[in-house]
Image 1 (cartoon, one colour):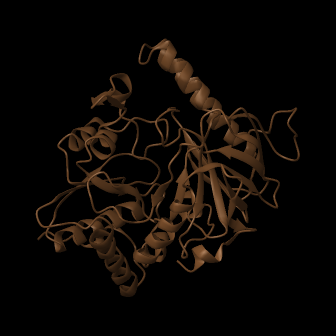
Image 2 (image 1 turned 90 degrees about the vertical axis):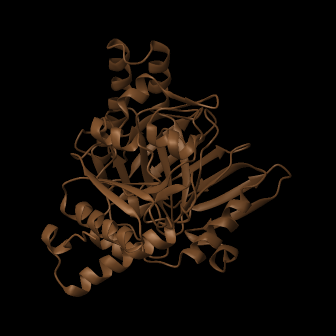
Image 3 (image 1 turned 120 degrees about the vertical axis):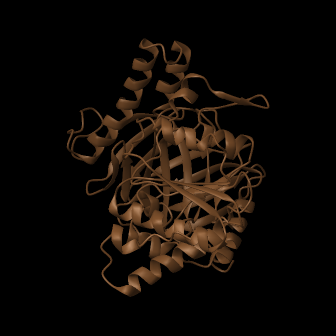
Amino acid sequence: MSNFNIKTFSTIETERSKEELESTALVVMRDVVAVKKDERVLIVTNPDDDVFTISCALYNATEKLGGKPVIQVQPVKTLLDYCEKSVIGAISTGPDVILSISKNKLGKDEMGLKYPYEYEGEEYLSLFDLFLSGRKSTRGFWTPGITMDMFVRTANIDYKQLQKRCAVLCKKFENAVSVHVTAPGGTDIKIPVQGRKPFSDDGCFSTGGAGGNIPAGEVFISPVVGGSEGRIVFDGSMTITGGDIPIKEPIICDVANGFVTAVYNAVCGPSSSAPPESEAGKLLASITGSEQKARKMAQDGVISKENAAFYERNSRGIGELGIGLNPAAKITGNMLEDEKAFHTCHFAIGENYDGDANTFIHLDGVVRNPTIVIQYADGTSFTVEKDGELALELQNA
């Protein structure tokens, strides 16, 4: 057994910190992905102190459970970058478990974007998606932006309770036609969800085809494309192309026919351009960057003009509504944790999870203290949260 010396790779202040890290890593590999003897585990990471150290702890935990881990290190990637070809090669071997322990993102599969992988009549834009969602031959989790503190504090939780809470909320989305979200910051939007099924990031990734975030703790759903109407005011934190940012001046997004029509703040207003250095300006630049990338790829012959137009359009789509359910999470300015926090919901601009709105970005933004009401075809409704407080039925799950 090789057993990495964690202190060689990171400054750990106390032995207690080292023990907490190792204990959390063991819980995650045992209780979340349930590594078994001789299973192959691929860990993709970056040469960043926190994510590399966490990767070493996961490597050690995998060995303790009898698995066969491999760590592969690549430069930090953003939403618009390609994954290293050597990493794609490692994924192509079909590991039982794939973990992306990244400072930002795993990166796009360049060949998959140009020549989508086909399986049983469906197309997948990356080998990872092919094995996870298509063949369901692998499982895993991804941690974009994870820190040591976050990992130890939010990943060593009661997963059985989290799974019960997520299951109750998913049940509430059955036969739903729409969701109305309002918040003190000014959010007032109605999204259609008829025919859509919710996804549960509940920390149960123990079978082929299962995967999600660590920290876990949300239920999310993709709005019907082209149907969302209203206004979102992001007042917690926001993902942009280069990472996550805390929000000091709320970002206002007007939405019509399912797409963002204006991005601004209270200072500049909808009729003028937000300053580039403002949070609203940074979000707008991320959206337009995705639109420009689509046009450039068409010019370079990487994707067709039809696909480019599809990607460009979806850069402004409302791709997700998510509800935070991890009791240990809080708003820190790091989206991986923020979107799981109690008293929040989040919306994503860009790609959705139902595969009918592909694009290059998925930009999550947090809304504080929302009131979330699910509406059904028979005229009844269920209030998931009222001013950020979960319904008692969910609290007691």
